[in-house]
Length: 81
Image (cartoon, helix red, strand yellow):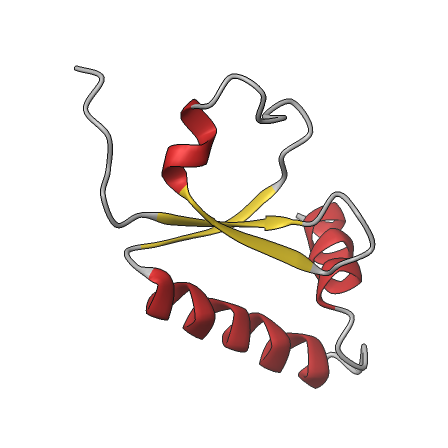
């Protein structure tokens, strides 16, 4: 129907030197937004839940002994799936 979601946030691997990007889903509808290289690692119902998911990802990364390298951990575990 083309109706947007008002509170959905996307967590994606950063395309630069950062670990992750958290952004509102409305950015996906903008023409200039690079969706082709987007690697989504989480979807949250609001910004607070997005931060909680990132915290969980960080805890999993630390438990795996990867010293806070969330991006590397997610890429490594995705390769094992």
